[in-house]
Amino acid sequence: MQFKDYYETLGVEPGASDADLKTAYRRLARKYHPDVSKEADAEARFKAVNEAYEALRDPAKRSAYDQLRARGYRPGDEVHPPHGGFGGGAGPDFDEIFAGGGAGGGFSDFFEELFGRRRAGQRGAQGPQAPRGDTRARLAVPLEAVYHGHSVRIAVNGKSLDVNVPRGIRPGQAIRLKGQGTHGDLLLEIEYAAHPDFEADGANIVHVLPVAPWEAALGATVSAPTLGGPVELKIPPGSEAGRRLRLRGRGLPGARGAPAGDQIVELEVLAPKAQTEAQREAYRRLEQAFGDDWR
Image 1: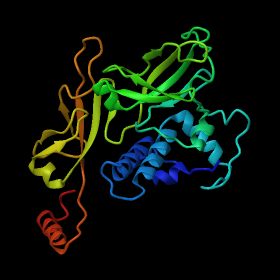
Image 2 (image 1 turned 60 degrees about the horizontal axis):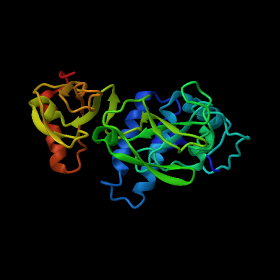
Image 3 (image 1 turned 90 degrees about the horizontal axis):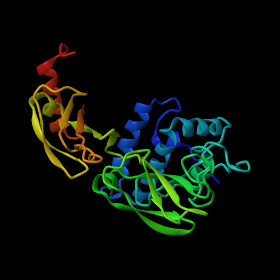
Image 4 (image 1 turned 60 degrees about the vertical axis):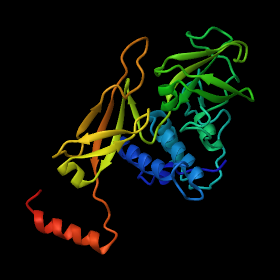
């Protein structure tokens, strides 16, 4: 089993904040997404970025990983875990499953050994919420599946199963698969997989939208992605970085008849890189027009 430097994969320092991790993840996930990237190794890089973020975004996983990394391992070094793994998993009563095709699917042996992840159905649950003989597992599902109510595919006891994800299901709720546990049913506790474009906040969805300085200053109508497809968004003149705009009803479906959540679009004002002489001249004209007093 070869050591992986998750900080190096994301291009951040070991002391990076949660916000820094999220920013790096979003940038790289967009860059290497197989649907848009033309790079030959895009799919492999995309999976590596997702694995690194999945390991570091959770405080317990990050702590376990940091303890191992502190031993001086470098990428490619052979790592030999103690019997039973490193003890950095989600707890004694849960396995973790990542839905195939989701943002977190296809993790490496290193990830599985470090965090004690095993395929569902290998052991029975001992917690009070699952009858003796049933097996419990956490299932990380893509936000798209929660929004549309799609099925996801998981591996259980060496076979593939399609799990129907109810629209609007919330983290902590469970799906029961009759007879798919070791000696009984399989109880899948839902959590949301990391997503390069969206973050769930209850029923609301948060999206960080890059806009150009002139779009923020003068106002514009731009295309904004949502889980239901792109929509036209009006940016008011004089908008600043961090301003939040609300798309009502564009969040996750409401549970049990409750109204749908909203999508919150947070503006990120970015200055495009000047790549031609005409573009550099445009920046020089801006410099002359605004001077140093704009700060």
